[in-house]
Image 1 (cartoon, rainbow, N blue to C red):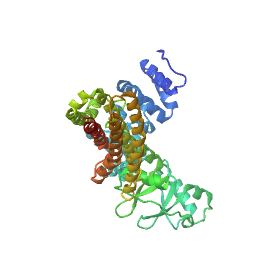
Image 2: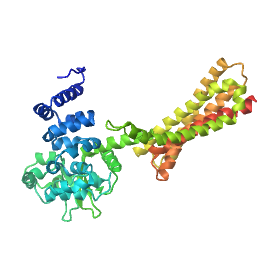
Image 3: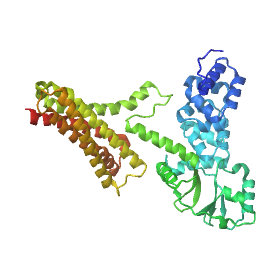
Image 4: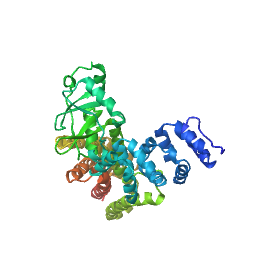
Length: 455
């Protein structure tokens, strides 16, 4: 077997090395044993860390090791490597064992010409559940919900509910926390936690245990809004209803954890103007995702350079201006980024709304003035010590720092608020506008003030 320098504190790396060694030896039994002994989430991580060629080779050698639980844990780009190497019937059988939301996520990664063949190999009821999920828009409650849930009329007893769940057997959701109580028209009216069911005598009516519903999730609600509802009301599950208020599915907290992680990652990357560079991405795809934003940044940098060019004679006359100019612009840029990050988070968490926007803008304005005064004074003193022979240069630095910090703070909150107002995603495009404001204003304030006071 191949020797691998493995850190004892990195069991993941050791597991990948063992898989790699077994693959190199084409050891089917070894691969089956390693993948069977590990948790499905760990196996998924290990496969994601390997190259596409290694993943494909493992699936070709031991396709039976790719269980439904492992498929449900794999990232989309890894599924693209794995699914083409599995048979239609194996995929169909795996989908039938999954909750409908996990099955839908896997089917999404199938090629269009193969999707129908796989669905046709599934039992009719399971196929309908998956096909129904595709009638909803992506990233909505209807797409991420699972259609399996436990519901009961309010006149049932605890014993009847327990007997019903036992009779359902494998048709029960893999994970569920509540029994939903519905009326004759399938409108959810409340819920009873499983923990309460298990504590009560069989003859007790579930209507006596009923908890009011805090939230009913419309089928077309954006998944980010669903996540906000879960966070706000500390939910562990919630019913999904159609346009007629009939319960059609449920969403559980384990699904929302994934949504929150995906949405946060998306916003964070969008704020930087990049896309998620997964392990399977090529250098070319990375360049394609980043180059457009860098091109926009190039144009804004040229705009800032035009401002500098206006004052090129002044810069040549006083070399100290060229030395101090980047400091003023950089400080303003960092201040704007700080304000922008706070604003984006506030918008994402629904803490920053139209109702309190004016108060938030006033806060940033006051903070920008105070921060500007502090660092303007510091830089003015440094300028006096450094370039004391240039009269009035400390005053130039002092004024420019305050002006740039005020503009930076205001742009950091007003730009995302404005983009949100017109329906654009603030996380995607705010940083370009804020950077432009801080650069252009920073250079113009500094050089313009210098032109007025020094010449």
